[in-house]
Every structure is written in C-alpha cells, then in structure tokens.
Image (cartoon, rainbow, N blue to C red; front, side, top):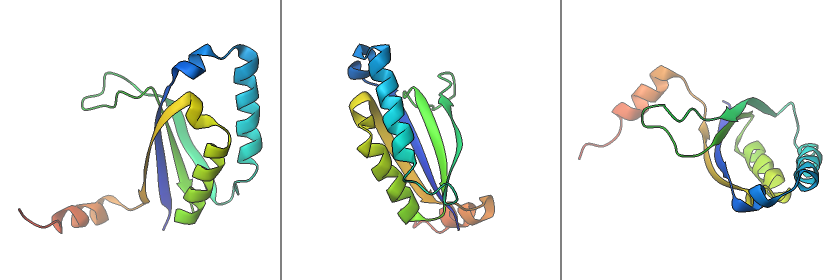
Length: 115
C-alpha cells in the first residue's frame, strides 16, 4: 500500500526578504536535495497555490502531494526537504498516512468508538 505525504505551507518574512539570487540559491539546494530521494519510490503528484474560497479550507498559501512507497520513503523525503533550509522560508504543516480507498475509509470511520 502506498503512503501519502501532504504539505501545506506559507511563505515566511524571511522568504519575502530574499532577493532573486537568494531565492535561486534555495531552489538550487532543493534540486540538489531531491537527488537523494529515489524517484521510483517518491512521486510528486500535485502542488500549487491553495484556493482560498474553498469551504472549510486552510489558511496556508500552497500545497504539495507526494506518493511514497512507504513511511520510510516519506521520512527520507521530509529529511531531504529539511536539509535544504526550507523551513526557514516556509511554515509547513505535514499530513501523512497510508493510502486507501473510499470503502476502506468508510469502514475505518464506522469502526470509531461511540462516545
């Protein structure tokens, strides 16, 4: 079963203060850091700006969705991201878990204990 990693993130004042050369240097570190992640085991599925008009949406600015082979690959991706200095420039919330289908998830919800 695949493992999904979802990131929600917003630029910090440190990002706003970076000039184009500094931003380019961070992007170069991100590119170099991704070389340590196995593309056969970690796949970027989607990323971009969040739509602010979605009911019950997040206040974050951006999202990224990654499909990983397992939890250890997601952990390796998180370590690679952290090593780039990303968290200096973007506040990030990570959401992760095993990927399952609708029927499986409904069964998980049904199995929650009653109050």
